Image (cartoon, rainbow, N blue to C red):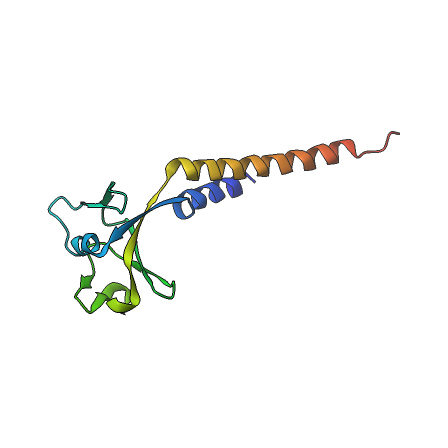
Length: 140
């Protein structure tokens, strides 16, 4: 049982989580086409907040229909008419994309609360089952 809980926690920390989403305009998105010398870029979101972007940052564009396309930072090309992300086999028409792109950063405290809440619920259920099985015997 301990192995199962450990594997579940490892999976949760590495793949699941809560994200903070920042919206950047196309001009800021265009800056993310080329890797800076430092390997990290800083862009400004729609609320004038500085957002750091590196190789493993989640970056998305949305179509007018709402479909979300993930991009790899520093590995796509934008022109006036199209966005090309060869590593993901995308050739997207710029007129069909929304003006804002999305940068997602994992929120450690929100993710920690989510995982802690899940562990608390799991522990409560296990405790209730243990209590029910311990007190369900006959009185003889």
